[in-house]
Length: 351
Image (cartoon, rainbow, N blue to C red; front, side):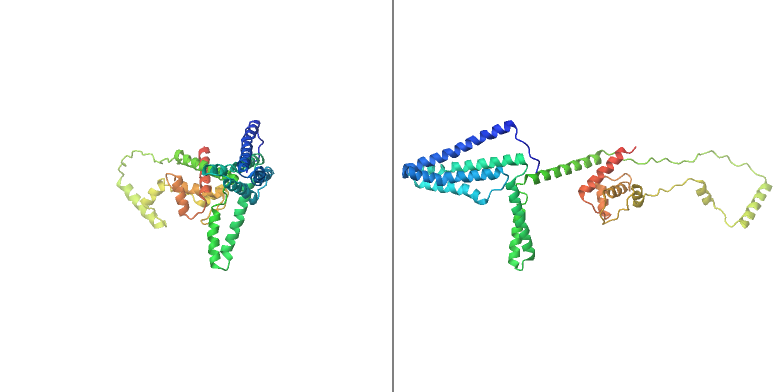
């Protein structure tokens, strides 16, 4: 629950003004009941009826108001009395009427006190929640639901009677729907979590859409081409001497080079060695991430970086997540999105 705040002057004026008609409505209901019953049974009976109906309702309303202002939950008996006593006064007043029209009027008149008491108690509870930052009624109801849910879950799991276990199982599911009902603190926290998820999702989606793939430049290595001139004719004696030298060298050396080997030796050849996950993890200074094992935030970034640049062009977010799952790595969707956002931020900040 958020911290309490003090009432401003306009708020105090408006709330005080709201209490006045509520109090006037309850008073008018009592006066009307007294007048209706007085005409049928006399003033003494009417006074007793008003004391038993509207008077008792007023007492319960003051009790409820005091408990609310103290930040305490009201007992169920007090809440029930706020409705039962005016209902009894309505029945009594209806029996004093001498016609259908007056019966309806006499029956409705005592309900003014009930509505007045409930309205003042509700407004007082909202004031306490605003100033103290906690709702005692909501906390009381939530605690009762959680206690009942824990009991029925335990009975559904361990009770020896199968029928009782089945009833408790159904009851626990009904109670589960009431958990958090009316809890403003829980609603605020869930909204904060949802806002964070929406913000992270939007950040990842925008980064995935507008990120520019950075690929290493490839420079072709070309050998200079020089025109070759036909060799000049050699004398016959020189050709004979060259053949003799070649034969003698072939006999003395243990290895004779072939034209193909000479071409491979003279040419420029290069093989691109893919970077392994172990190397990426070593650069990041973390242990090598392993499938089916919990990963730290840094290890998540390492795995996503390795998967993203395992192909050309680099993988998108959806492709990287699919490769992540196919490789057997584990991680929640929220953590993966956060790690991907960190990876995109590192790419944008890299020179």
